[in-house]
Image 1 (cartoon, rainbow, N blue to C red):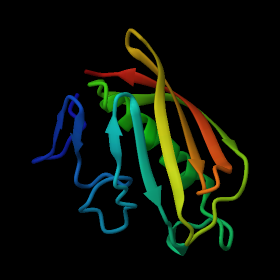
Image 2 (cartoon, rainbow, N blue to C red; image 1 turned 180 degrees about the horizontal axis):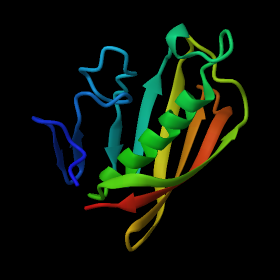
Image 3 (spheres, one colour; image 1 turned 60 degrees about the vertical axis):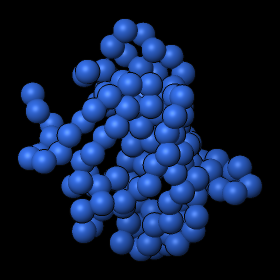
Length: 141
């Protein structure tokens, strides 16, 4: 099964998907996350505007979940594991507000054959946790 569009490629440790809603640079409505990843960890800074809100001033829970998911996948990519999400369990601690800076951080906890267990968090600059997730990924390559 090919998950990529024409011209896109997925290599060990690197993902180039230009139309990805989360990280694609050529998606006009996407978030365009800039993610740094290495040694089983990934991080990004996000600041989302009102286009991603659910309630007024608050980022939609589905978008928050997608942030936590994306950062976990990148953490696995940094270990040469190309994965898709198998299961995600999100805990919402505080509302993620629009037009504020947040750090999105994820790391690999354990690799068990084709299953990769990760943890991801959204925090502010004072280390307050806004949301966190346990993410189970399935290795496809």
